[in-house]
Amino acid sequence: MPKILSKNAIEQYNREGYYFPVQILNDEQVASNRKLLETFETTQGKPMEGAQRSKSHLLFKWVDDLMRHSKILDAVEDLIGPDILCWNTLFWIKEAGSESFVSWHQDLRYWGLDTNDLVTVWVALSPATLESGCMHVLPGSHQGDLLPHKDGYEPDNLLTRGQEIAVEVDESKTVAMPLQPGEISLHNVRLAHASSPNRSEDRRIGISLHYMPTRTKQMAGEWDSAALVRGEDQFGHFKDTPRPTRDFDPIAVQFHEKATHAVREILFKDAKKVRQTI
Ligand SMILES: O=C(O)CCC(=O)C(=O)O
Image (cartoon, rainbow, N blue to C red; front, top):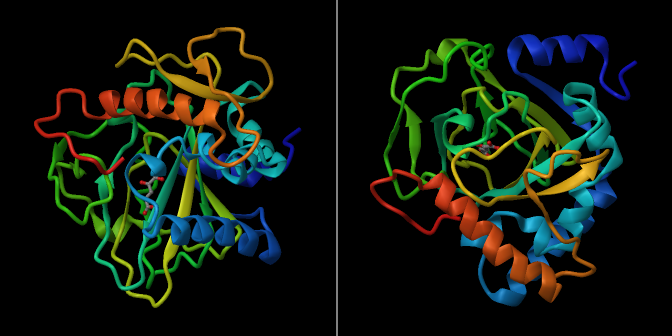
């Protein structure tokens, strides 16, 4: 018996590789999370950047809480079972009117993980619309072989290497996933996805949360970390991440440095260039 998703939603996810929207946060909770983010940015005098974008649950207690939100975990459990690790938490912010974009890509091509069952939950903290550059997906592309990719390193591309599927994606077959603040989408780690620049007057703020079964292994690096967010980890393939007691908890900050370094090594493995996007 599923916990939160309908039978149809689960069938659609398995068949097409995505499902949306699911309402998670109310307006007050969205406003509170956005305020925490933007107060931090004001304090540091610049937007969230570089390694702060990645494994952010180690830096910000509110992101750790979001990563453990029971409704999100119920949806993830409906898709991948009860023993769940969160591998990464990643900010995707496109400033108002910015050229930032995400090229068509499949995440599993770069993440070194040996699972097809990883589910990405993308949480909207501001409107993700056609105008602001919401995600688009290519339904069914999670089935079959991974497509070849090339690295473009375009400055406005939010992806580490500007990685892009090296064959043409038929845009007429793609689907937009607009979200209201507080809603999530769910997509499979093999699904091709992309997004366009933000032509709106507000920032497009998203946080992606990457959940996988505890049996998953990291094949591209010797050491990697993940947070056990539900159930039991009988495998111990990933170092469990410490839980911050407050923002910038020193123990978690120290761990963040090691953990994001490990992720960067994995993401840039065999790359011609390394850059500081995360
Ligand atoms: O935020 C976006 O537009 C893209 C996000 C993405 O690539 C992901 O969550 O895997």
